[in-house]
Amino acid sequence: MPIEVGLISDTHGFLDPQVAKAFADVDEIWHAGDFGDLEVATQLEQLKPLRGVFGNIDDLEIRNEYPEDSQFECEGVSVWMTHIAGRPGFYHSRVRKKLKKSPPDVLICGHSHICHVQRDKDIQDMLYLNPGAAGHAGAHVMRTLLKFQIFEGQVQNLRVIELGPRGRMSTGSGQS
Image (cartoon, rainbow, N blue to C red; front, side, top):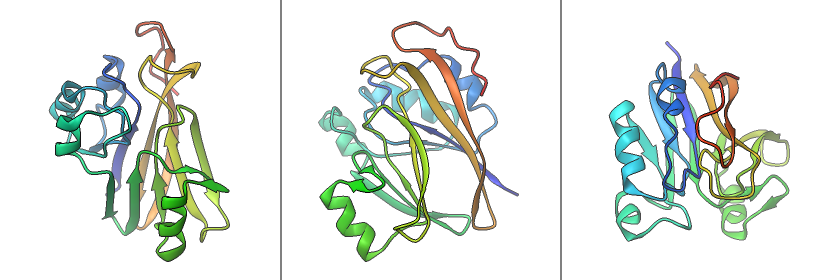
């Protein structure tokens, strides 16, 4: 059976009610940092099992609950999740060093508020995933999430979910 994952980042203290609907069918939720408030994590944990990392805006309370980096395996796929990674070709120096030493199959990050999915041919065809921002803070135009399945060592059925424009409350359809 595939594992269905809901990927979210940069909530900045706001959890759109649409997230519960969008993630109703997932097995796990992964948050790539900048929760903004521990209450966001608590609400997500009430929906599904949660994995997460802290982001640069997160306070000590969140940093005590979540690590800076989370490295794990899911259904034969090695995953590294961290908040600030940069992007393919322009990785943060800390990340670049680790990628050269031991690249994962999938690198997940947030921070940029830009939804970005790309295969990095320079790093062993690693899949780079940034779900964009789900909250209202920041310069992004559209609030986004990612959903995907992991099955038999492969990421598949990747979808972008739009929650609606930044600065407005729950106006999107929650559909991709």
